[in-house]
Length: 295
Image 1 (cartoon, one colour):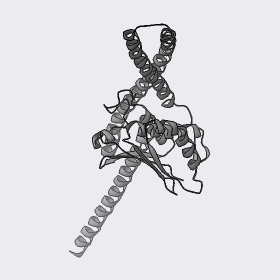
Image 2 (cartoon, helix red, strand yellow):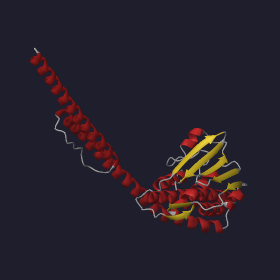
Image 3 (cartoon, helix red, strand yellow):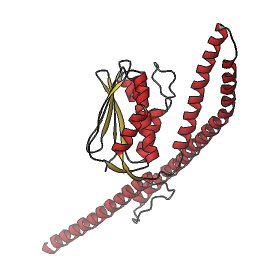
Image 4 (tube, one colour):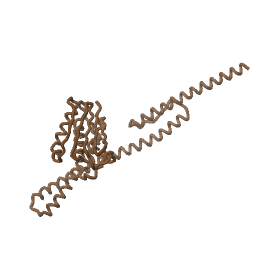
C-alpha cells in the first residue's frame, strides 16, 4: 500500500513538473509573440513572427497573426504609395498653376494702369482679390507638399528666444495695421535647442500669422525658462470645436475665407518631425497655442 501511495505521489509530482515546464514554455512563446508583434507594428518591415516553441497551438496562433500582419503590410504600402502620389500631384499642380497665375497678375497690372470706368475698376478689384487669394493658396499648397516630403531636416544649436524675437519683429507692422498691441514676455537667458532653424522660423511665422488673423485686438506671447511657449489671443468668433480642428489640413475658420487652412497644419508637421509638441486650447473666448521642444 505504501509503495502504491509513493508511486502515486511521484507520478503526481512528475505530472506537476511537466505541466510547470509546459506553462513556462507557453509563457515564453506568448512573450516572444508579444515582443515580436510590437516590433513589427513599430518598424517598417515585412518580416514575420517566428517563435522557438514547437507547441502546435502557439505556432498556429503565430501563423494567424502573421496572416493579419501581411494584410497590414499590404494596406500600409498602398497607403504610403497613395500618400506619396498625392503629394507629388499637389506639388506638380501647384507648380503648374504658378505660370498662368503670374501671367494673369501681370495682365491685371497692365489693366490697372489704363483709364477705366468706375464699374470696370470695381470688377478689376474683385478679380485682383480672387487672383491674390488663389496665388496664396497655390503657394501654400506647394510649400506644404515640400514640407511634408521626406526632406531631411538639419538640426543645429539654436537660441529659441532670439528666433522668436526676430519673428515677432517681422510681424510688427502687420500688428500695427490691425491695431494689435502685443504683450511679450521672454526669458533673459538663451534657451538652446537642437532644431532646424528654417523649420523653426516657419513654425513661429505660421503661429503668429494665425494669431493676427483671428485676434480681437490682443496678442500675448509668453516663453518660460524651460522653453515652453504660449501664444494667446482673444478670438470671440471661435469655439472649442474649431480650436480642436485648427491643425487639420485645409480647415479654416469660416470668418476668414482668405485663409488656406495649411499654416498650422504645417507648423504641427514640422514640430512633430523635430520631436516637439504643439496643441491648441480654447477657454473663455481666448485661444492658446502651446509649443514645446524638450531640451
